[in-house]
Structure formats: C-alpha cells, structure tokens
Amino acid sequence: MTLEVTDVTKKFKIRKGLKSSDLVAVNNASFSIEPGQTVALVGESGSGKSTIAKMILRLERPTSGSITLDGVRSTARGEEAKKYRNLVQMVFQDPFASLNPYHTIAHHLERPLLIHHKTRGREETRAKVEELLARVNLSPDMADRRPHELSGGQRQRVAIARALAPGARYLIADEPVSMLDVSIRLSVLNLLARLQREENLGVLYITHDLATARHFSDEIMVMLKGNIVERGPSDEVILNPQHDYTRTLLDAAPDPSHHGRMKRQVHDEYLATTGS
Image (tube, rainbow, N blue to C red):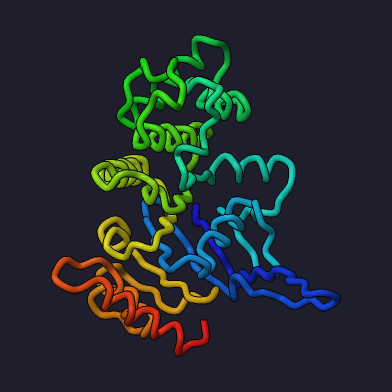
C-alpha cells in the first residue's frame, strides 16, 4: 500500500486590479512513501511544504498530477474516498488550536471512532478511547479532562491518538513539535518514531529542522520555491549535500560552535542571489 504523489502541480490565482497571474506553489512534485517509512519534507516557510500536505489530505485540489494510495486516487468519491480518508490522517502543527476547548478528550477521540464506524455501543467506544490513550502513553483518566487541563505535549499526543482512531496507515505530520517547549519535543518525536516502527506506519514529516529530519527520517526531500531540489537517504543529504540551497539550510541550522547570525546571513544572501 504505497502513497504516491505523481507530477503534482498547484497554482493559485493572484489578482492585481483587473489583471491576474498564477502563483506556482508546488511545481511538478513526485515522490512515494511506503509503509514503515518516514520521509522528511524540509524547507523554509513558503516553500510549498504545507501545500503538498493539504493536497494529500484533500484540503486542496492539485492543478495537475495525481495522488494515489494503493491505486485509489485522493479525488475519488463514495466508498473509495471514505477508505482514503480512513487511511491518511493529519497531525496538525498547533496542539492548542486543533482541539476544541469545550469538549473532553474522550469526545475528541470518540468522534472519529463513531464517524468512521470503528466501534459500536458506549462501552466498546470507551474501551477504544482508553486504548488509544495508552498507545500515546497517556493514562485513562485523561479521557475526562478538557484540553486546557493538559500540557502542550499531552495535547499533541491526543492529536496523534485522534489521527490513529480511524485506522490510519499514513500520518501527515506538519511541523508537529515546532510549537512545543524544547524540553518535550524529543519525547513527542520519539513517540511518532515508535508508532511508525511498531505499527508499520508511513509518515510524511514536514519540518524546517534538518537535525530532526536526519534523526527521525529514512529519506529527506528539500523544497525551494515549490520545487523538490534534492532528495536522498537522510545521512547522504546531510553529510553530502548536492544543492546549494541544502548547504545554506545546513549553514543556517543552530550550532553552538558557530555564530547563528553569520549563518543566517549566508542563508539570506543565497536567497537574494536567486531572486526570492
């Protein structure tokens, strides 16, 4: 069961007065993710990473190209569309905004179970909620709390449990730890890595952080201005980058042995030379 993105382009219409033009957010992107594989999509804000995620999740429609899962197109309707949605789920960036503050954690996990007909009856649903919480290392008593009673890391664990509830085989994780305290980011990433390994999940890990991309992914793709400019095994991309932009991203990454301001300057100078 392969998630495959083939020659996908996304253009947005930009209007200026009576005239309009096309903004190419993603240009002819192609890649695939296998079960049990984590692929990192790396680039700065505006590079097209989140647009790819939205197209995979059917929140945006590609201008051209196709996205398929086990041969089922993401644009399918009826039962095929329902199957696709069950198997491809999202972990959002902001754990504080992605959970409704008026509802309990149990409610957030019960809804996908009931909507996707995964359980029947109150007792079975409650048991499944507690099982989902256990899978993300949360205690059963969390079910009756509301989001404001949980830490950011706990909320993101709930978000991961919610994504797993319909039976997801692929997770699209869009900057899943960028809004968490540095002290708890590693534990959430380790949780994702454990779930990926134990449940043979395919993961698209979207990030601007090359260090975590190398540590948690099998393959890295680097995006610049809507184009995938470099890809390969994680260690190879990090240790032997082929594209100038990949090198500037590495130079701009935090490193206590160098001055961060100087690295940022190198990064900005590269973008200036490319007209960004």
